[in-house]
Image (cartoon, rainbow, N blue to C red; front, top):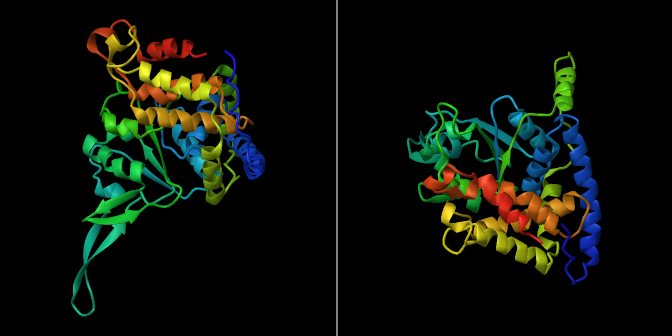
Length: 334
């Protein structure tokens, strides 16, 4: 697969200067994360790309794969004010967003006061999000898309930057609820966390069972992360990359999709998927030392961006998986 040419428009000098500084900051952050999270390079890269893009991430994997540890490490490394919510079946929306309480003043007057919930953080860790009811999961919808919440008709803005990194057990595990499609679409990526290789697991055994365990160190502050996020949106994207993103997303839809794919798809990715893939390819290019994305970035990020935005119909599930569909679409790029 060959890389697409860069956009013909030359980069402004201030963009180049900002990019050089951002590359140093990103490298510093990756080194700090690597000192705590062993192996899982692809998971770390996709998580970092999600935050550099200004998006939200859903980490899916069985218990014990350091998903929570990764989120905590990212929060500390990037200098984000973090809150954690353990999702359970009895969790209510007010436990996340907050609620109004009636207070009586010294003059016996009564007024409602809003007590902010844990969602008012720069990084919200929604741990085991699929253990809460769909009603509680949906409490995050407005916050994830619009970066504010409404309570009793009043708007409350969330801190900047605002990110949700949720962990999820596979749906076949007991005591879980599938996330609604609208909720899934708010996540820029679904990052599948798999078992580590033998060398990485050996390092985990040696470095996490002693009397001294490595702790994450801060590499950035929240303002620097925001600057990088703005820079990501200024990076040029070549026409070949734009066309590849459009072709990929549109081919995965059940109505206007590819003739060999559409009959098997129940619902497919919408425009938000194309937006997510565009931002993510820019962020991945910057994270790997480049100033414009290539077709290789599109191919690498298509699975985490599309896998949670597609579903196969009943008859197709017996013969194929969403991952296989995405691989067929990716193989046609370039």
